[in-house]
Amino acid sequence: MTTLREAEPQDDGQDLRPTGRLVYRQALTTRLAHWLWAAALFFLLLSGLQIFMARPNLYIGQQSGFGFDNAVLSIDAERQGPRIVGYVDLFGHRFDTTGWLGAIAEDGQLQPRAFPSWMTIPGYRDLATGRVVHFFFAWMLVATLLFWFVASLINGHARRDLVPTRRELGGIGADIVRHLKLRFAHDGRYNILQKLSYAAVLFLLLPLMIATGLTMSPGFNAFAPWLLELFGGRQSARTIHFAGMLLLVLFFIVHLVMVLLAGPLNELRSIVTGWYRTDPEAS
Image (cartoon, rainbow, N blue to C red; front, side):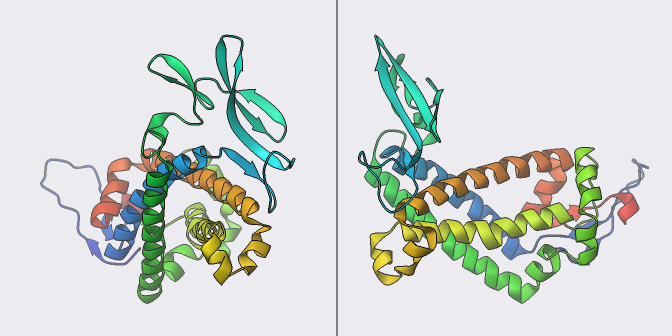
């Protein structure tokens, strides 16, 4: 949350370099939601891979199984002579992923396993525990998202900081060029790329993940059968859910890289304390 509240920079007479002012950028509700999302998404990712490992295949449509040819992705292993080979089938194309996916080294020997143990919660095969962890943090994500929606409507954060103006949209090309040149404006406000990416995640991707997750629940299907039709079946919803997870991982990687490039200490202070130091020319 960007506000006009600011603090005067301190000058102890020892450093004559100009410094920008401190602005109160992130409200407490935004900071709290940020770290709750970070924790929830971390455990959702690793427990989700544990669940996916029980059937590491993705299909399009209502039905799946050996009698149907509708798989779009499969992670598996096969024995070729004396060795085990891991592979990924993606849209009919096979890739050798031995040691990474499908066949993982454990105790010095390759074992048929979709993901390494460090990528799943728990690290050993335990579908029941994986489901318990996944559902707990899924509801934590839902509650945090609702909390953020209400708080952002009350304090104006969503309207003020996430909705791009027509002028900002018109300058998106120039902003992309500045990012490619690693030139970042430290004025305490979100740029157009931040606004679009944050809005896409908060208003589209996270609600889509929640909706597709509910679609995979037979109990919820009885309550809202129209979700099955909306997503083209439970298996299609599972595939969309997995693709959404990959997009969230990509967003996290880009987000982390941008934080490091833009000044990690300043960015971290902003999301921990709320205070952000602007550039001198922006003061």
